[in-house]
Length: 235
Image (cartoon, rainbow, N blue to C red):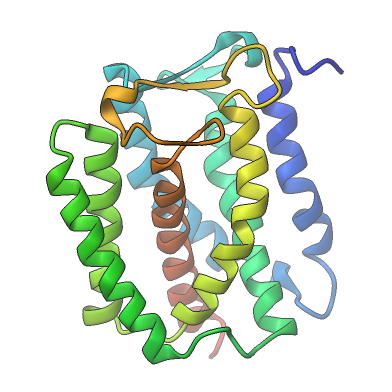
């Protein structure tokens, strides 16, 4: 299949899911046993990210190139974008679980993770304030900063070291998938951005804001996943 195809975004999403899905039923990690917690967390997180996505698409802060889409839309978003918010968290939380199973000792301690989180939280809030008017940057860093402060001061979770380790690893497939979405190796972008509303820096083709957007997305998914796992699967 040519990359210049209306099935490109769909194919990219299927490939993102394929490996983790087929390994989910192996007995060691037994990812499938936590599907109830996983899909509940994904559903709740979508309640935040989908309206945000719809609003920013309508405002022209980002948009989608119909050349790479199958043409099915829900609330103005291509069906492939809806799949993104299911398939990407599914695959990233899978990496988090696999790393925790095979390498239970994280790279940093709980204390170091909390200190790092506090630093990033206040830095994120400062970036949001200083970027007022660039709404992708403001919304992303505001959400990330508040999430981080909540995890350190309110919920005091114990999985932050594992989360940061998994996120560093996730950046590799994230760079590949998001690279394609932002035009790497293609004639045009699949997802385009209005640079007046972001930091204006690119990592290759990827807006730098996307890294922090991904961190907020995955932190919310992981947090809810661990909450429901503790509530439903340890009885």
